Image 1 (tube, rainbow, N blue to C red):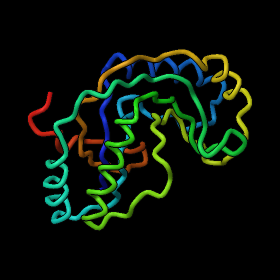
Image 2 (cartoon, rainbow, N blue to C red; image 1 turned 120 degrees about the vertical axis):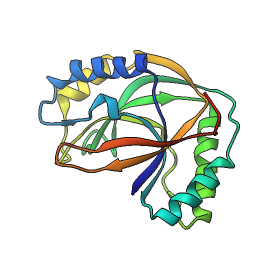
Image 3 (tube, rainbow, N blue to C red; image 1 turned 60 degrees about the horizontal axis):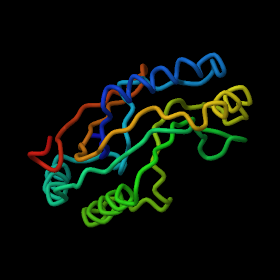
Image 4 (cartoon, helix red, strand yellow; image 1 turned 60 degrees about the vertical axis):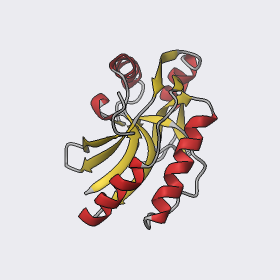
Length: 185
């Protein structure tokens, strides 16, 4: 299976993200907007995982925790890699260092299982849209700047999931495989 580890979002935050996408859609009709139900806070992308690796993954992830709740606020918008040549339009995630520490812990555990370590600095975000051709999006950039300080909601992350991702012509479909720490929530 194609897999990743992520924090799921509460419905009020998901609804606020859907509203934001709707407000921004007119500014950039050529973007591929993500399906709101599929938005998540990725901690570690794994890629293809064999059945044997999946069992090892579950065992390794079971060793992480319990987690103290991590306060998260969704606010601000931006582009990866940059506004001049964007590939991704995202909503920002403001969180204390504990979120980055959790992602680093994932990296260490997954590297021991043979998964490549991510060399980019962990930059928590929620993907709202993707661009096939990386070119400036001045209308979207202006619309996002006008809402720069707006909060889309706050929540506490006290668990995370192993997700399966299935690619299709209609976009990726995500399925929660298992919740960690086990017994949480």
